[in-house]
Image 1: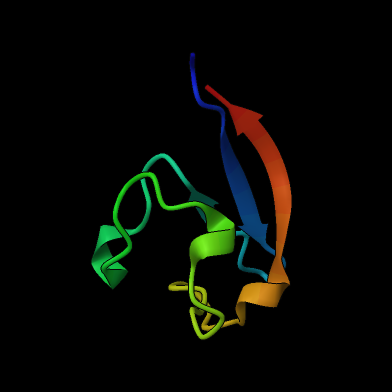
Image 2: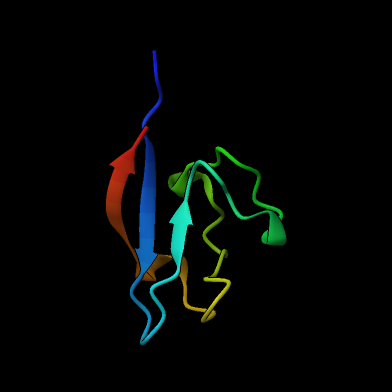
Amino acid sequence: MEYRYNRFECQGQRCSFMYEERFGHPETNIPPGTLFEKLPDTWVCPKCGGPKRNFQFWSQYV
């Protein structure tokens, strides 16, 4: 069974940072495979500092 990972895009002004579950974000201690909904509510966009609620689902991939 293959798992489908999701991508979420920050909607902050002129940001468009993409969080990809497959890769996580090691620079902020988020390991690969971390689902977006499992990120702490206090997590912020590493590019613009916007809150987690600024992110929208963008696409799904294998």
